[in-house]
Image (cartoon, rainbow, N blue to C red; front, side, top):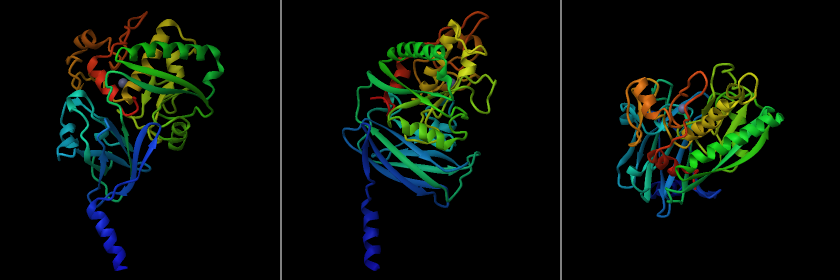
Length: 367
Ligand SMILES: [Zn+2]
């Protein structure tokens, strides 16, 4: 017995390496730990010289919450500090706000520099919805690392899931395909080649990702490869019927490992209107909605929020402080928070800035 204890203690002291697997071109490290009396889970992982970005995801069961509290690089520098980010008017990563599944991609943008090789430390805290720390919560953590530093030029696999029979109408399928063509052009402007595949999915009775149907969303994510972003088109998003919700993303950034948040969900009825036939204006919005929500999923915030007081952390999306100036400066940006419309048409929201491109290109799912 004593022998065993000594061996274990030694293994702890030298830093036991977690098992690393290669999957769909990504290197994956996984662990599961229970948070301590302070609601903290701390773990370390290795980044090799040839690795250029990683996506860290923490997941807690049921109605629990977690935040990525700190991310410390091999030089001991805290590069993500939740306490600091909570007080700022610019948003960098959704992973520092409490949710059942939280993700941080690093580096986030070019000014973060290259990914440093060596031993990284991540500190996750398990909380309730009010940010109070909660001990003893089982926390699953995954780190996906990519070896791709071509940050001007990347590819993203996107799978469209036609759920609940929306693809039984050939006109709906044709309009969706037309919308993906428009979407492709928007992403091409930041050097991102979107590659689409399509699949039918039986169950379309789904709430937004992160709000239930966890097993169903995990099954959807398992049906596509690890680096694929899943877009689930349902007849109507459960709980939001007729509420004007066009679509919603499972995180900013969203997780690639299968979780209840590993999708973007799109409401067919809101996009196509009650006649379920797309006119030109609706088709434009449909393409922009899907590209916008996947934009969130790969790390993009709104350049300005609807209170005109919170902003993204991108240098080349101007800061503005009222409705008129924001619509004038940013109304054509894909990530603007709402469509800018007159009675007959909406402003095309298809612009992405170079700074937004930097973020998208660093997302681990982009190769
Ligand atoms: Zn949005």
